[in-house]
Amino acid sequence: MKRREFLLGSGAAAGALGLGGFGLAQGTPELTIQPASFALRDTLTTGMVSLSPNAPPPVLYGKQGEVMRLPVRNTLSEYTAMHWHGMRIANNMDGVPYLTQMPLGEGEVFNYEFTPPDAGTYWYHPHCMTMEQMAHGLTGVMVFTEPEDPGFDSEQVINLRDFRLDEDGAFLPAYTQRGAARAGTFGNVHTANWVQGAVYDHAAGSLVRLRVVNTDTTRIYKLHLEGDDARIIAWDGHPLEINIPMPSADEPLLVGPGQRVDFAVAMPGDEGRSVALMAKLPGQPHRPMAQLRAIGSSASRDLQELRPLPVNPVAKPDLTNSELHEFVFGWTPEGGEPNNGFCGSLGYNFWSINRKPWPGDAAQDVGPLATLEMGKSYVLRLRNESPNLHPIHLHGLAFVPIGSNLRQLPPLMTDTMLLLKDEVAEIALVADNPGDWAFHCHVIEHQKTGLTGFIRVV
Image (cartoon, rainbow, N blue to C red):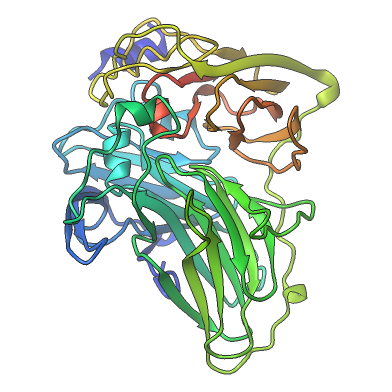
């Protein structure tokens, strides 16, 4: 019996973070998925999902190259499973139900254990009942520190996400049929770390590592910084090996669901001045999602004092000896409801890869979109035949963009490629992690209505 058939048939200190933190390298408490309540507006919103009854999911801290043990307990009446987004770890720890593990029922515990090969900013979220649990709060940030401190005085994690609430602070439906068939259903309460207009204090004149993560189910943020000196130092967890210009109000940085960006920020020297993370939302002026406020006397630090981030040990593809695979992302010519087993369905299909919608997480006799040979280099051609943008995420592997018909793409190592309208982009990778790896759009409504599949590395 094949492994997939078997699965289908068997049952850190909070400090300046503004979020709680667990230092995983020192021993992990049990991570309990549970109902939660929080004042997202002026009134308490119930029906949320978190790892705490009254707070956002904490930042989970670990160290590059050190083993992490993450026991996850499900106390919800619905099923779940936890995925560690962007991590190049063993396939059986990836947290994708029916593909790498069975869903986690009420009262059950799954002991995730892996050694992160890469430093950087990553995140975690459920991959079962994905729409409902993510939209209600279960998205958290993971930080893996480098063996040597690059020289920051402090850091700030910003978890960007919307919530969809009525005037009384109660949840509206997480998705609509119209939204799922288009760009997605957007939230109307815009938060950083579950807070509107968040302000965090950092020492004046100090050097801050600002880790920004888009964990939203739908929204593509247009971001820039307003304030003192700053530069981008990492993208989707991986240090930059080239310089790229800082975004501005006129030319903001597009950060799709699942993507992350790290900034090195020199705080203002004068107490009370701020650096603001600005977002441009449709039909609205630029607004601060979060601000870093300078306090105390100036430390007079300079960005030149920082040590370069060491490059993560990701194999570089050999473009002179690579094989091409093509993928088409668009609407589906077929209808029908996918079979997602215990992991929830939106009830219809709108999207497809290679013109076939995903038949469902629990569907039998489903093969890979492509089979890659271990250790070989590949070019994947990604063609968007829809007017909507798609952040395409590949589990378990890292890749580098190498070309586009619409724009110049900097060669930044990543795990999520934001495809623009009518874009044809090429990405390159080394197939160096064996297993069946989910490959899908990270607009969750698109994922759950057909725009998903998996790639096999053997």
